[in-house]
Length: 197
Image 1 (tube, one colour):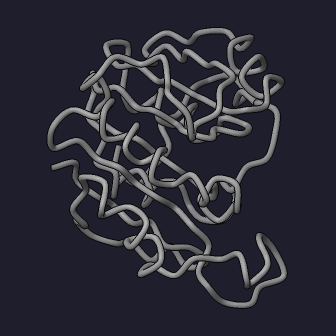
Image 2 (image 1 turned 180 degrees about the vertical axis):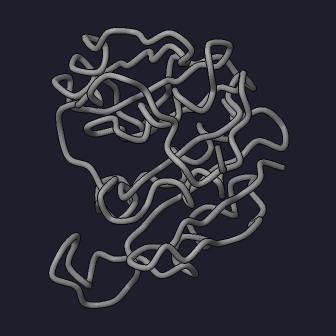
């Protein structure tokens, strides 16, 4: 299996509840850019329907762990209600404000994934608190990945005035203990990867 293919199973894919940007791009290149390894811990911050969580669970294997957080309890309840699959990482989902303190141990997470959430004004207004908290839970050298729609007019996603250019995202993230690693252009969005210093 190449790093850009979705791991296959014999039964139908599981579905969550809530908003998602998963359809915006092929997930294979996104997860190849994240470079997940079996056994790692993946935090899906603002998980929505949880499709990124479900994909990560397949890549991380039984020794890995997925933590999914969203402020919509229906989303996290739906994820918790899905049956576990052999060979996949367990998913623990809980409802919480990702801009506040999270009930996660310090230095216990390998990858924090924030997908199409930062453009929301109430999240952006609390970006310093949120990114400091992400830095707290990440292991030294861990990855923070921010996926945001490009700052161009489009007939989907947030309006232009809410969209963030790569430079906007970097300005919000880098003062809080992160170094820019690289950026993947997915077509409609940028996946900007940072390393916790």
